[in-house]
Length: 390
Ligand SMILES: [Fe+2]
Image (cartoon, rainbow, N blue to C red):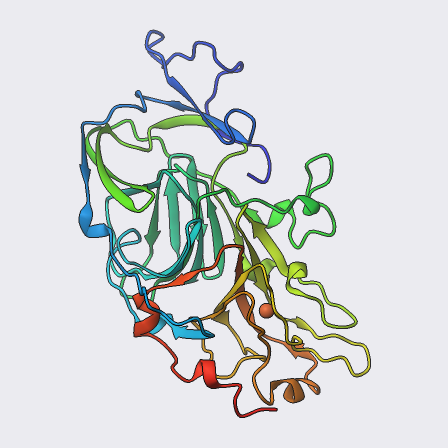
């Protein structure tokens, strides 16, 4: 997505014959395009027809009903690490928040799998909270480490392979029904990342090391379509691509590489923007010096975001404006309700010159529903924690 990329062997001209080494049989061209044929796209060349599916079976055991229908509308804080999941990178996900356009989940990945995963209706943001390994796809591999934030466009067949499944591997996943995009104002009219962007092209990890598997057999792809999961058994290895080029591909950007902006007085969250979709924005809060005007208050003023719910996922460091939050916490402040620092936090911030927090913020334009996973991991005192102040 950030820029043009090419791996492997491709024909010089698109939509022309591209023969295998035998000189007789053709590689099969597939164009993967967004927004009809008007958005970014990638053209890939397969050993075999990409449309061959031997069997399709719905998997009902992956469709977990986690609604909390009578949840009160209050300020929420929950500890996602209290709901430790088990399983592989596909089936270990616990959804905490969701609306009709997105969901926010965490996953403790304890097992490897030979299964492949394809989210056919949604794009995914995956934050590697803990663990390292390699991301594999039919477009190539990306080595990953803690803090990497993957953007995986919809319909990309892939796997996360962690190095050590006895380690505390954890992912945070935001699923979106529209694509994650680099904000338009970060891109010059010529398509290059502008100097005001919080990252540059060299900060992105892009697919490398294209391994082509020309193997026959039975391979299992877990396909997610909305809230339903299917098992697709295909007769050829899903990574049978010999070459591709284009703009539509998975990539990663480490939250520790985000270049923050600092203001003379407090700057609101849009200056921390990382990615956006049509229905929410995603920001990176990272360590930075605080505001430098005399008397400036570093922590936020109280505010009501009347058009968005505000979610914070706490990744690492000290969280100056919140009492009781820890790494792995999620807070949700529903739109239309004022929120701000807890009692004492404003005063405590006055002598502080820098923040060491790492957090991801998701501001959704449609209200979020909390799930039973929030109920199970709830900080019961959080919504009352402002009562002691004045
Ligand atoms: Fe806020």
